[in-house]
Length: 424
Ligand SMILES: NC(=O)c1ccc[n+]([C@@H]2O[C@H](COP(=O)([O-])OP(=O)(O)OC[C@H]3O[C@@H](n4cnc5c(N)ncnc54)[C@H](O)[C@@H]3O)[C@@H](O)[C@H]2O)c1
Ligand SMILES: O=c1ccn([C@@H]2O[C@H](COP(=O)(O)OP(=O)(O)O[C@H]3O[C@H](CO)[C@@H](O)[C@H](O)[C@H]3O)[C@@H](O)[C@H]2O)c(=O)[nH]1
Image (cartoon, rainbow, N blue to C red; front, side, top):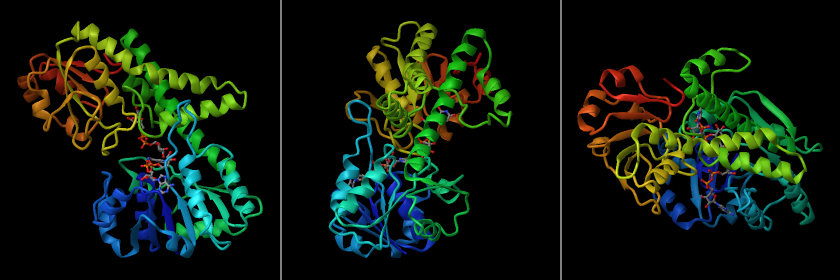
């Protein structure tokens, strides 16, 4: 098939690579000229494992354009993968989506299918369909939300737990078009209405975020009772009804999706006059999680002012260079505001320009002479540190495991003071 993708970000580029590997011809269009120029030179603007390899292997079927009008006209299927960031009130800003539709309207025709991958407020796809119809364009509109995780986006795309397809009642063609598009990807299809698919996306992210906030609240209690939250997570996670995933306590969830989508769903509930008690609690735990640990550090280290603190991790999670809503960046900012002499490190991510903290090139440079070390992002490189060597390099001995991902025994055996999240 001939596919056009509007928006060459995480979702657009991953979708492009996956569809090209399946055998489709893919034209990626982005309004960011610099990004397109880089992609045309073979440079990939994000770090995502396996993406570069797929782009190289299937370059004969992958094309990048700033002005892609001709390719829109020739496409069988057009994907919308533009951002839907929060506006000042936390509601999803759909202006990028609306701009993409404005751009498409003069060029689309009745044989085409428009597939929405962006996470959009409930009712958006129905409105897009009506708008196109009012312009005389009888384009099929499909809601096909994306569930990939950054850092494992390619794996997730080829091995999804499910493929969600939202359709209009009178649409009897689009399901088979989507099945042809995803030929070779084996997953159960969940077929629902346009709004049903939109709701599934928000509900999935809200539920996963709620699991994290739940275990983080349990970790706070575990701290007070001297109980290990890792044992608690294992003890509840083995119950098949609960499941073991997303029960890793830590300094909170971040990234471009969970904070934004939980807040968006809260705002949508308010608009519908429904009080979202659960979602409010999920957000409240997450919003206070960093402060909880800054206070804990103060109790351990005394005053933070003037203390040299190495923060390992800048990205919001490992295996990505994405720092959007990163809890690590928030932690670094707060420690700096408390007067700590912070030095940060990350294997791939870079501190934002407005954070006036030094970024070390190597882990050793960050750790040297530190009074305390905090792991804020659970990269493998940090889990595999030689803790005797770390002890020799540090001034102090406090190791704060902000992701409960470090080998506690090895750290204690090296003579360091291990402080986890909800762990003795
Ligand atoms: N990042 C993820 O892991 C992830 C996973 C699932 C769903 N989503 C959802 O997918 C959507 C995209 O997320 P992302 O992280 O890929 O965003 P992104 O910010 O990385 O990329 C969006 C791209 O769209 C381009 N763009 C914006 N408006 C445009 C327009 N009118 N025409 C052409 N290009 C335009 C931007 O220049 C940018 O390159 C969001 O709704 C997000 O919530 C993201
Ligand atoms: O047990 C856990 C699991 C995750 N996290 C944190 O939660 C955040 C999000 O992690 P993850 O879900 O792995 O990454 P994302 O790439 O943000 O993916 C989420 O958001 C995407 C965008 O909507 C969805 O497509 C994915 O299904 C959904 O998992 C990160 O800060 C993690 O450190 C925890 O604190 N504890």
